[in-house]
Image (cartoon, rainbow, N blue to C red):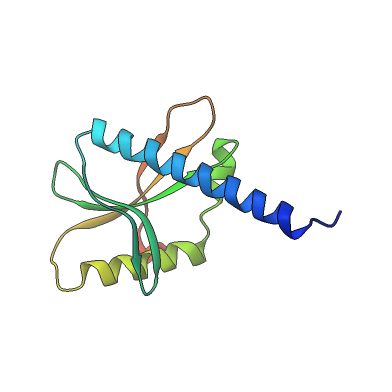
Length: 126
């Protein structure tokens, strides 16, 4: 089936709205846990980081938010290439700052509370 340009645009806009909703839910979850939000949709020359937050222990968390129909699809949606891009963007953000950091994932699935996966990967794992 061939999709028209208008249909593709509508699908893209719907995905964008889902993503923004997911990021808002993820932000609320982190705030409830006592995290301080340092940035949303932070852009670097390496790419965008969905959320940057500081934990109660002072660890800077680079959070990738995935909104998908089920948990498995959400966690599988972050491939090695995307993790490498996020690590590179985080390095640019942290340049010259001696802050401890980690990489988290928050999955957003309809009908369920967002799930926070702390320390989801390490730069050495890529």
